[in-house]
Image (cartoon, rainbow, N blue to C red):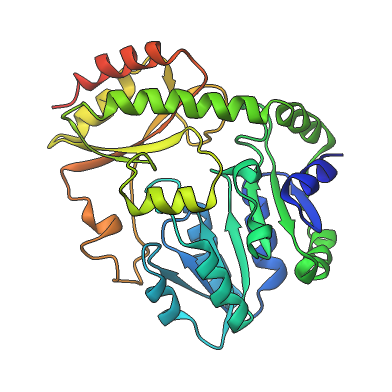
Length: 332
């Protein structure tokens, strides 16, 4: 039942369901990549995606290269005749770069390279990657699909071209979602549009407050209509959700930790997308193999700048603002 619901939402040939969100990424990589292949991965991806690409796939003689998500030219330069897949996370779930997706798809099709988009932030409600020409669309169902922080799962929507290869590995791997988890995620999907709209409205209200705070150097979210990220968000998405990051300026990392710890309405946790607000201090690292990001992206944050990722939940935004206001006083 859940496969059929998501197949319609994604406009996919088939949807594979896994027991965890990350299982969907692992399924795609293990099903399609073989020794001597190369994969190109945007260097803003979810930490475990970077780890499986860089460390585990190496054990199978699959080489991962990481490209600058702000540079299509960097992606072009790193393509070789061994490139099997381009793995895109849009936006980066810590640093929020939006990429020009049509250009990536055109480039990949010309070179006969598989494409996968991590669409957990936007969900297929706001962006349908397969309609753009991606071969695979991944979502962590643990997050917005569930919406209640009480179920885990992943979905990998695919086109006809990759279906047989992924089905072959899916049957053998045991990567399965349980019936109980599927039931809970179906329940969550019934309110997906209502919840996401409220997450976005609350987030806009919070950002108006954050823009006035001197201790916050930058807000990483498509809110500035003159920015490249805003234009690329507007080009592809029909809405936005509740995850953003703030760049906090402080000479004392301990005071930023004190800020996060002082928040009463924001829980601490990685797995956003539920009804509640979350905050977490993020350690941002680029892949060590690639030097292209010097002066930009991860390298642009100096030692006095700290990224705090916020998920804005469904609480009253006035209460959330009051909580943030008292917490910001901790930053020195």
